[in-house]
Length: 276
Image (cartoon, rainbow, N blue to C red):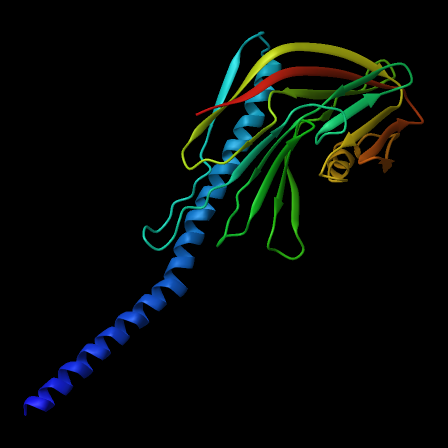
């Protein structure tokens, strides 16, 4: 009787351990990935909102220009997580200042004048359970890329580089917004919120007449071209073409065979920094 009770106790303990291991395995293989994916999705949405807020804030600096005015956007590069079983997902933010040949560097010109601006702000979510996402602000435009899908998803979230205006005095009118980013270079990863600030240094305006050429140096490759094509497709007589300019540049030409092009260009110089 004593031996039977001991065996029954041992068997019961083994069954309890097996049930615990099964439930733990089920938790780790099913609940944990689903919960972490949910946390990372929320975190990715937050990063999207932060990037769009930064783009809008820089646009306001240009629209309501006052030298020395600063706007701030709070970023949080950390997802929620399941304590003891998973670590938080932490993203990466990098800032590349304007420099010839660097990401986001754009040269705009016609037969008489050449202007340049550049710099990029890039955030990678580093998601492990949800799809990994990247956000890139270059050439006054916010680009989005989603990894882990087939084919890869590339899209434009905000396109602010060129806007079309009603034609006047026989001219095709356009406006261009150039943002020249200074500060950095910065490569940053943090498990706590931080503030990204942008301070307006100067603002200049120019008028370019005639056919326009854009030379863009960027990791984006040809992704700017479809956005330009969509914006200008409704203007009669305007043509746009794309080719490789060599040395990492994409060359985009905007030309008209009917009416002259008048492009008003606004250039904003901003210094961007990080406060903990």
